Image (cartoon, rainbow, N blue to C red; front, side, top):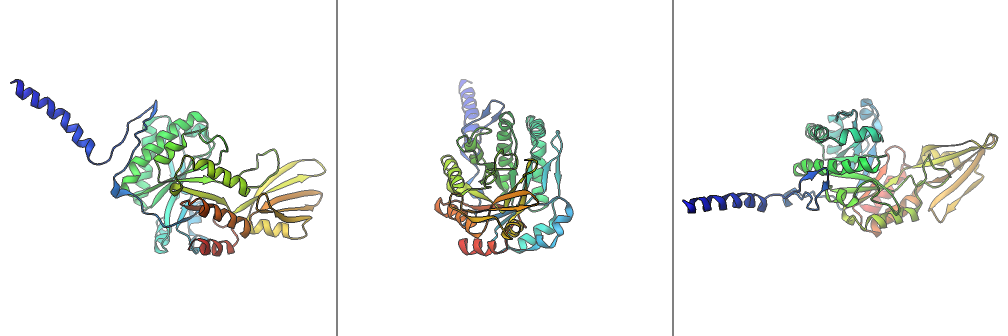
Length: 363
């Protein structure tokens, strides 16, 4: 009888060990944090990427935007397109969708992968309420998995902004749990992170995010944005390189995609009232505005961009323009640091010749 009990006890120990030995190994998620033994899928599910990824975000505000003619242009060299389809829309974990089967079919017919963007509206409170509850997180994930299957998506691109560190803790859980569901299905997960010189982990653990996603996209723009107290460039090349070098201390280069701007910020100062304001303009529109009778026009060696200034009706306008030269300097960063590729914000803002430049550089 003692032998039977002993064999039974040994069997109970062996069964869990046999499960742990095969398949994939994952850690448990708790409110105290994530284990270092993060999720690691089976080898057969490893995503095979192009030699260099060339991706662009496509701003979709309404369903009709999926049908516009410019949404049907297969730019030379383009590998991945990320339409802004999914959005956190309620504190209970609701996700709104603008997804289109026809859009995906067109992309696939042109050998372009679709990594649909999921965003949080830059709303920290909404994000905290939705992600701080396990059940709500699972509801969000279930919807994203369903959308990915229904629309035959190749990936999900996460773009969660304006979070504080308390929300960032739950965002880590969310990324971990989403990756656990999508990666075994062969659906790529990429996560957008801003440049934070000297303070990469202020909101969330970049290492954990990188270990539980296929790619990290560093948003190397908005160095000076419309909320800045002084004028400055959108993405000076030295600042871009510094941001890349810092994140490469945590993220492997083959997992890092460089985000670049296809726009400039226009700084406006009314001389009569000293009022300051700013606006975004695409490359072509900004170039046209400042190339006509500029008061100042010249290449800024420190930024790699054209600094230009004009005056109209007692109002000074100044900007740092993105052009072929400044974009080529950013392409050099991808090459110099052996990065996975690049992504640009956003489609429709670029100069037409930029695609010839990108295609010649990478292809």
